[in-house]
Image 1 (cartoon, rainbow, N blue to C red):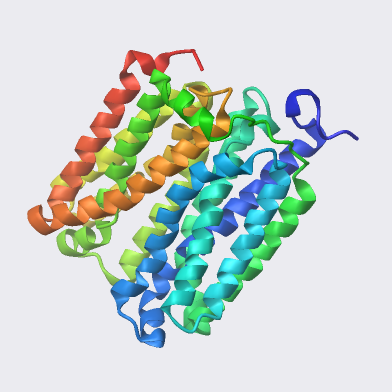
Image 2 (image 1 turned 90 degrees about the vertical axis):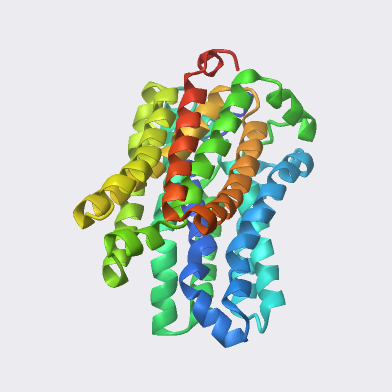
Length: 394
């Protein structure tokens, strides 16, 4: 049974299994990325470092991933994509083991640096494979399934890390991450067909993609909407505590509900993007920015606040598949180049968004971060309504 057909597309018997294997890989990556969030106090106490220093475990992977994405395009060359992805997931295993056995902050940061390399490179390659594994209209559905690993990982990563840490210790959480990573290696190795590289341009293809008006609009939209999300949502727990009187177990439940809503948002975003890709991004932006702004008005009502945070999660769940589908429509002939730019701009926006949000909160209070989110979301919508955003040229 042949798995590779003309132009590097994959035969039908194996293609959906390959998509599932990439979803498992993305779940392992995102779960590993978020594992330390609920463990920072324990890690800081155990290694006798400050909580702020422990926070570098969250910052490091994002910054490294932003740099790793274009370098993947530059140096991946003609490497078969299956072999490359398996190697990156092996690196993920090593990163978790390094963190689990770390005796100090330097070893922990080395492990998280390795994770950042795996995250940036994996998403650059795997995020562009949906249309290749399932050509035509089913490419959006394939992308949605691959990206569902993000939703599962986001929902599972923080509570799973905290739960395992409470039952055993923080090192056990990283050992669990390593075990999950081994499972992802096995699935990708067994289920993903061989995929010869279709990118012979290397890093020289990136400027050509940036020369396209639709691509530039899409990347500006990525910057705006990720700033909108992370400038405000990073501080939503503080907002709910201060304005809504929500804290403790109830707060944890609300944030978990936000993550679960994100999972369903991923499926909804895939459906909408399959119909009209611009509408998926616009809908996600409306839900994110609208929720932030309405919270300012009704945030003192606990029921209303909880409802809006859940709606917010639905919107953010729609965003990755909607945004990725839009960008891929702008560069159908250069999917890996476009994906590398998406990963780089997205990761920069995530880090910058939290920084901008913190500055706004310090000078204008929590309400200022919500207003900023609404404005940045509105800018995203305007970009998606620009005539160039509806161009059929790729």
